Image 1 (cartoon, helix red, strand yellow):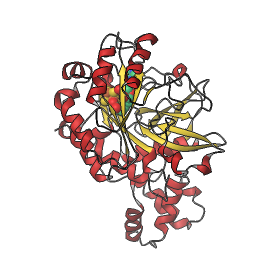
Image 2 (tube, rainbow, N blue to C red; image 1 turned 180 degrees about the horizontal axis):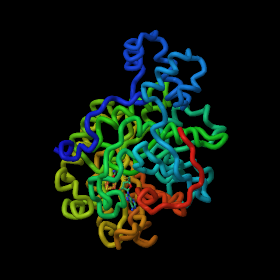
Image 3 (spheres, helix red, strand yellow; image 1 turned 90 degrees about the horizontal axis):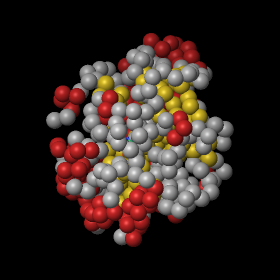
Length: 399
Ligand code: SAH
Ligand code: SF4
């Protein structure tokens, strides 16, 4: 079982930022406080992004002191912000123990891209121009705002060892706690520019979210709580390398409401095992069965991520096999030309091959987008910034 040997975060008391309103209610009652304060505290923390009890102006001073004694405060700090020419912001985020992860803020771009490229964010799966939500007219209130997707991390490094991935090459340092996962979003929201609104969160940064299932699931509940950040669950996407039991668990625990993105990257067991060692534990055929069984709501689709690695998984024949494998699954496909990493000689195919791969999938009737490289000039690929040596500080922002 993956959880045993890799459980690097020992059992520890729940951090105050990880408490649900019900848990706050219990906790405050045990401190002799009125239960209705729970909603106030939760709103300050998760709704308004204020983590310093001293700033919670409608709470009595004695309660603010108790919250400080409780250890309430920021769980994440910005150590570096790199802004790309295209508006993407790459954040290097430090935890209280000094560990760093990365997070990316990706504003939606208006106007057309190249045909077949994703019109939106590097990491976005929810906004690929075929938004089911827009059909339902739920998003009218954001029309005057720039919609931002935030990509967040769930672990420091990653245990899965995918050969093309900087986090995989680095290995797992530790899991993040739910307060650190949510803390990235609170930090990110506080850094938004005037006129921007956070609309999507994708768990596609460092780490394998489903290898850190409990912390991830709690973070999902907090982020979608109506009194907190209040993200629509369909606007939150978990990306996984294919941990089959946890995909099933996620489907059951959230009734299929959380967006699911699956990193496939190959069409046969041997190639996939070579690129992604996790395939030896949960082979492709088991993974595909779990996708068939995922309780997908009507009009929703699973995102299939396929990183194109030159000479390894990028032939037109493979595109054809991918089309056959995905037969009868409701999916959209994101092709990601591999971002070169320092630790590997592997790289992306040339554009001719990328378009040929895409065209084959489109010819076979699939929605297939090439994930546009956003923020390339600020090392916005998985794990690249956090694993690079120290870079110049831009500013420090607590929260
Ligand atoms: N662990 C999860 C989520 C984080 S990785 C997962 O693997 O799905 C998010 C996506 O980035 C995955 O599809 C992953 O395969 C891809 N990725 C990682 N390194 C990459 C690189 N160097 N170039 C292109 N895509 C990469
Ligand atoms: Fe981990 Fe995802 Fe990177 Fe694979 S691609 S090593 S699962 S972060």
